[in-house]
Length: 305
Image (cartoon, rainbow, N blue to C red; front, side):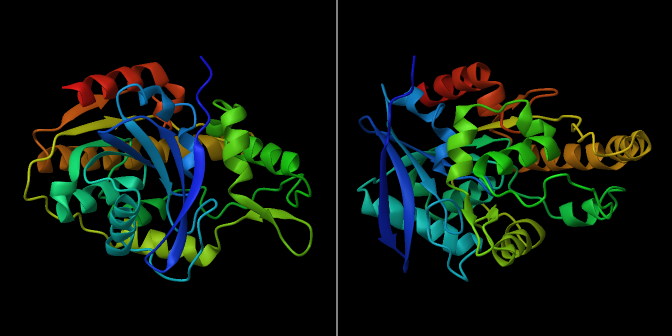
């Protein structure tokens, strides 16, 4: 069944303009929050499956997609306030929040700050505490390897997408019309006629500093029902790397990256012992796309309880 077409709208709040999608439905509300680098459009296939029982919305955070790109506000407090004011603007008193990847920070912070506004929290491979991630990344043997790209200056959107599929095999394996739509809202043509990310490097840097390296999860004083998916996986590497480089990375992944990931999951379970945890071995980070049926069934069951 083809997903319903959402209303695309904007709200003016907290000094900026934010974009959102509204698939309709009736209360209670279910709000989707995308991961870093993505917009509300990433949920275009998944979100409308819930409109029979929920009012379904998705918000594009500041510095992403069709929302504004202010120079400040990329910290947990401000992003949480953006969500609260978004709910107020759309007259949503209480909602379940479902967040992907970096949105885990927003889920935890919002739940801790405004527990009376939250029904349930759903973490879609969305760890909220990644302190130490940058230090681990510094040990990645591929971090300083320059890769020669055949088409590093895409002059069409199709060229940009081709580059992305080549450089990120994990995206290529789940590519569909959904990604065509998502990418179209996340890039722009610069003054040289080259397609580049809309997100400035300065915004990316602030988000990493504030939401990964510098964020300690705020304590939730109220026990909110939680469903969390984890997708431990061996990453796929681009064929632009040599076999020797790949072997070096996979050794790093086994000995450093995997143990670090397990420690983050264990810490999440320690803080939220009441949470329902669903582990998808060798699942995809975009589990709501790659393992859509499994994730949909678990989320629906959780929301209906």
